[in-house]
Amino acid sequence: MTESADFNERDAASYRYWIEEKIRFADLDPVGHVNNNAIGVYLESARVTLFADAAGKMYGGREGRQSWVVARIEVDYLKEMHYPGTVRVGTRIEKLGNSSIVVRQGVFKDGELAGLARVIGVCFDMQERKSMRIPDGQREGLVALAGPVVQD
Image (cartoon, rainbow, N blue to C red; front, side, top):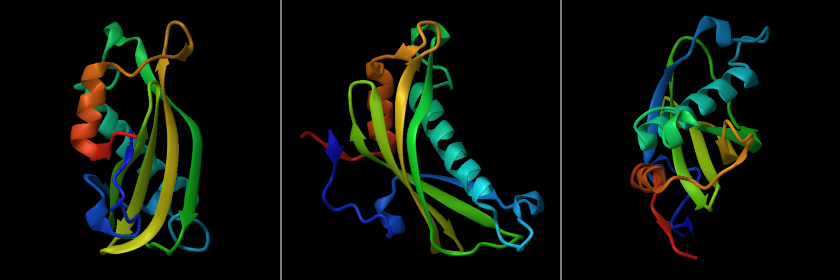
């Protein structure tokens, strides 16, 4: 499955799934803006929350054997962000494979785009220590929350 052709990563309206994160004073670097590591935490929080919501619990499926691991992450830092405030992180599925997912994420502060990410995640069997097929129920939940995706 791949994303619908109408996706515009710079347009907040293109994202389906949203979380809000508070900018903490501890998120700042010596220059006084939000550090790139803090932005990574905002992005991770959005993904973890999406997977938990799609599965009904964080380690859904297969009796707690399943989790998600990041195989690749690309982040573009586009605009400084400062304390205090909140950010909104939008997430949308780009591609959903048998055991992997590609998501696009946008970080917005005060309605302005501050960062973009593309993340490849792999559904992971915690006992076997290898990738596993995304459970059907979770797959349906992911599409419902962060789709739409269309068939290849």
